[in-house]
Length: 326
Ligand SMILES: [Mn+2]
Image (cartoon, rainbow, N blue to C red; front, top):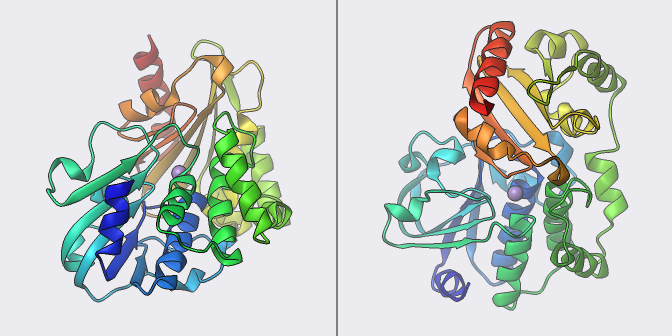
């Protein structure tokens, strides 16, 4: 952490990036860090290739995350909640920064390789034991003696809240709750974050969840509970992909399934897979995700495959998982 603090103190222009398909931890950590760094006079830019899901519109300075950018020199790039440029979805980092002096990685995903393996001026703060990148970002801001404002607190609490599934997942730990308590002292409200993110849904979205729940197949052989949502399901009801956030966790409540998988067909001929399990079930879903080209945590991970035919892909994925498990 000391090296990360030095790196930030010696940098003036800083760009913050996170992974594609940004989640609450990605968005919250980027915005929390951005506001903290600006408060000590840094010139900060935030960029996301993918559009930020509108459930995060309530976050302070959300409009600060740019979708198009003029590449220029940056003293420092900070990668948050991911450790490889390829995870940002940016084709070429030169499209975003014409050049940079240093790279800082802040992440909590277990991983084999990071961008520091090939870049010299790189510092990595990676701790896979913490619940979220937001916790690491909080520690970094404290290390920089930055005052945590209510706005910063709201952003970071959103990161912790979403990555712990509303303080219900196995990664919920004293450190996360202590951070949450400090954020509440600054004026953050967990109930408001919960309402914005999990507890406000359109009728159409609820109906689409119903379709996915109706379709669940529980396979005793593999222990897998699987369901899917196609692009046409979403189009027919006028529901956006982001409104499916949390659905896989509901599928994962089936007591006799060892793990759950939700497949979602996106517009660009891709199928996203979200995998969940519970600690007592003894399954490491990150292994399954990795075998399909993805990654993540033991109990929450994902992958993405190219596909134009969801029915065929479901069958292939099912077979691949069964083969992998045998
Ligand atoms: Mn995270």
